[in-house]
Every structure is written in structure tokens, then in C-alpha cells.
Image (cartoon, rainbow, N blue to C red):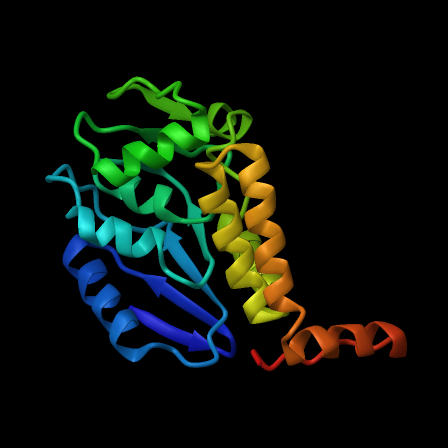
Length: 216
């Protein structure tokens, strides 16, 4: 199910068919003025089917808006692909994640980036603490939904172009040598200097007020 709350888009579903339908709706509607997507992976049906189609995972990983996921329970099977497609993951302390024997190739590639090639063992339940210490969870929270929403709202309050280019700088930069990644980040920063939002941010700082970003 897809719902809209200002600049925040909520995306939740309990079964794979519902997730596919929601993904199609999200893609079709384009969600003008949306700035961040909150993925709810705290209430879903266990599913041990085949991995998601690679194109679906690539579509999620390349989605222009930041994806913030809330995770709880025992995540396994293709749900792992969805969780790892998110940019920020917030997990409950009791969360466990079990990698299936078959992951979508884009998920394997992302895991390799995040773990520097030290891929976890398939079939073994990984604790929330283990995942957090290795950077596979961004944070731990007793109420992952509330914390994920808090983070999403902070992101939504920022300049949309800066947020989108920041996401691009991080994920593309991870696969580059450091010097090249820094040059790429600088190029994106120069692009932002020409935006109205950048000027608004400077004015708001000087006037000691909250900026009003328009995505322009």
C-alpha cells in the first residue's frame, strides 16, 4: 500500500504480490514533491520463494528518492533483497536476518560493497547487533517504525536536489577509487551551487530562520 504524508511516502505490504503492486503504483505516479520513501518491513508474511527479478532490485537501488526501511522480526528469503535495497535501515534489537541461498545479483553486489567483500554465510540467522556493528543496519531502535519515520522526516526537510545528489554521490562513490569519488562529489556540489534552494539555504542561515526548499 502506498500513502502520502506531505513530502513523505509510506510504502508497506504484507506479501510479495502487494509489494509488486505498490512498486508499480509508486513508479507510475511519479510522486511530485515527494522527497523520501519510508519502507515498512515490520509486518509481512514469511516467503521463501525465488528472489525478486534483478530489474526490480536495480529499480529500487536506483530510485532517485532516499529509501528508509524499518525492520523487525525474522527477515529472510526475498525480503532480504528488499531490505538491502534501502539506503538507510533501522532495526529492532530483536531483529534477525537470514540470507537465503539465492540472492538477486544486485543484492550480492551491494552486500559486497557494504561488507568489503566479506559476505555473511547463507542460512545463518544474523543478529541485529551483528548487522549494526558491520554497517548493514544504520541504527537500532525499540520502535524501528518511529525512528525510521523520524529520520525520513529530517531528510524530507532538506533540499530535495541536495538529498538526491547526496544519495548518488554515496552509492556511485562506493565503487570508485577514493580520489575519483571525491572529484565526483565535488562535481555534484558545483551543480548544486546553481540552484535556487542553495540560495534559499544561505539566506535562511543569515536570517536565522528555517529554510523553505522548493526543489528548484
